[in-house]
Amino acid sequence: MKRYPQLRMLATIALLLLLPFAVGTMGNAWVRILDFALLYIMLALGLNIVVGFAGLLDLGYIAFYGVGAYTYALLASPQFGVHWPVWLILPLCAAIAGLFGALLGAPTLRLRGDYLAIVTLGFGEIIRIFLNNLNSPVNITNGPQGIASIDPIAVAGVSLSRTLNVFGFEVHGLYLYYYLFAFVALLIVVVSARLQDSRIGRAWVAIREDEVAAKACGINTRNVKLLAFAMGASFGGVAGGLFAGFQGFVSPESFSLLESIMVLCMVVIGGMGHIGGVIFGGLLLAVMPEIFRYSAVPAQQALFGKVVIDPESLRMLLFGLALIVVMLYRPAGLWPEPRHRRELAGKKS
Amino acid sequence: MALLEVNNLEVHYGGIAAVKGISFSVEAGEIVCLIGANGAGKTSTLKALARLLPIKGDIRYGGESLDKLPSHALVSRGLALVPEGRGVFARLSVAENLDMGAYHRSDNGIAADLQRMYELLPRLKEREGQLAGTLSGGEQQMLAIGRALMGRPKLLLLDEPSMGLAPLMVQKIFDVIRDVAAQGVTILLVEQNARLALDVCSRGYVMESGRITIADSATALAADPRVRAAYLGE
Image (tube, rainbow over all chains, first blue to last red):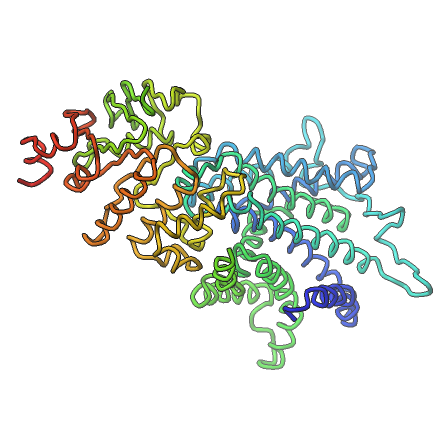
């Protein structure tokens, strides 16, 4: 396969195109899960830039998802009565989230590790609490009730939330969203990969490895770190915008600390700094709990004749256990960056 | 005019003064060393010169005041630091580390410089594709020096290159330093190993608790009874 990159790409595209139909045979709920998995993959890829490439631990990443989601919600809902087109809003989601990323980055430039993690965690909470309370004196976010009846995403005048009739085939809206999300995710993958191989990517890695030495190499560490925060955040913002349009409803509770931790787990379990690994981690952690949700009750009934532990608790229990096992036996993640690739690259130059 | 002129340099860590107003100069083409015990302020001086610490005082590099230059602008002006404890990028390969040294350069002489570095440091050539974190301490020191040289420095600041290395490896590192100097690079060397430092240098300064106490030629320093008693163990 390695020798035929075009063939490989065609196979990947074919797989991506056919995947929802394969999954759809189990019911539309699973296509919906797949859609969410793609959103999580986008988030994980965004966080991977900050945590994986630049080595800056961010525990408040979901705030940027929230910023993106509320940007979309405010600009395409009855809340303010504005209904901007999606192609205008999504870049704006990226830009505003990126701005917030730089805003978070600026005061934390001199922090690393645990200290940085605590400040970013605080930042994430600040955003969520702001969203929760910005309903008075001027009602902006509608507070804890959230914003409802957000316009669905429409591409070229075709709303993605309705069933589309293509040459007599009925294509459910969930499939349409899948294709849009897959396209955006693919775009993010390409940008990530290009960034990783660029001058900026090398500067990020240098900062991750040794900040003083990076400075001694003539890297403007301040700007490069801010750029990492902003780039990572903008990916989160795009994912947030798509989420708002897809869901049709946003409220502050979707952007809790647990979500930040979940995305971080995707990056860490998948393989920090490795794009393929991060995608795998995102898919795994987004889909596994759902599989579990559907299988926990029947499995327990078959085994014990009754439900011993309710599926939600069991899910968290096994999730924690899985985390510990992965960290013990695969500390670099399930699919880390292959080392030999690096060594081969070294030999070539 | 000297390549580097330091007048009344002070470095403070909060309320603690690590460097208390020192003055010295380095002429182009010289090897100058700062020797002294632990805590004398040698490393603080070098870090200040690389603009990694806030500074007070008048420092001129090539006639230009360092005040206005941020740390990342120094490398492109030919002032390079080899930090204490080497600071190689552990999870990058040797070749990638060297390449990072040329980060600020956009000319097409980088590949040729890489080959030159491998000639100067043949050990690195053998380990080209290996991750820097897996090298021995001495090899890492060579890599750190090589990385700094990739930026084509005029003035190289070397911070304790012999730290934690076996005597044989220290000899090799100092051979490299001599080779580098022979190629016309000016070197400011900070060392605890006074004997070796005075051996390669033309001039030296002795630092004690934040001040320069003796300044003389290397041969005079090596013969000075105070230096002999305190740093050469005689």
